[in-house]
Amino acid sequence: MFIGEFSEDGAESYTDELMEEIDGMSDYYMLEGFWSPVFFANAAGANIFWKINQNFTPNMRCLKFMKVFSDAVTTYADLLADADFNYYGIDENGIQMGGYSTSESVLLYARDTAANDSGETVKISDKEVESVPYLTKNPRSVTTFESTVKVLNNGTYQVTYQNIEDGSMIEQMEQTVTDGSLTLKFPAFTRGIFVSVIKK
Image (cartoon, rainbow, N blue to C red; front, side, top):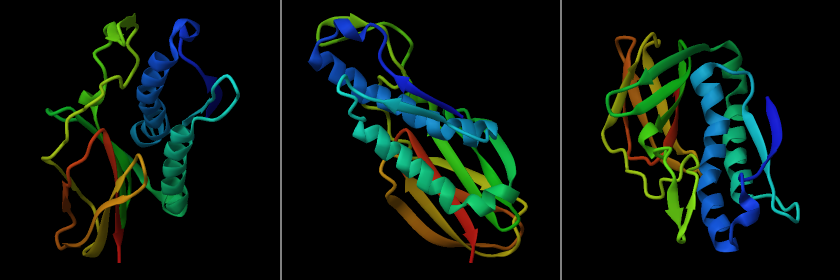
């Protein structure tokens, strides 16, 4: 686990308007720092940044992102302790997915890699700045993504899709497993989505 302070390189020369705009997008870099190590690399901890301003006031949106991740992990802590890790890679549409599973549960995190920036220098408020991750302001909405999970016991499962930014439930339903596999048809999402599949 990494715990550290975060600031923008060269920030001392940025105007307040520019800094606010860059900060707003780099928050998403921190959001990925929570989810990606755990769900894509089977890491025991996440990148925990402590982002503050010159008055040592925490960035409230980052704290909210951190709490959503923390709530998801602590809710299923017992399940995670005995689950198998599965990394599904990146599909042809740029959707990356990984997670954990048992014979009666699945936890998945999917993210849209196209929401990343191009890595090129960009211009904000008439000032050229080095691109930061997630400077893409209006990423696409992913509307057609599905995945099949296997080796589940037959029965009825509660499937919940969750917004990773604010923790809100996007969609919840019951699905039945009869042959050991379950096809998940994800609702529309932007940047990333968390899904839990739990046997009732």
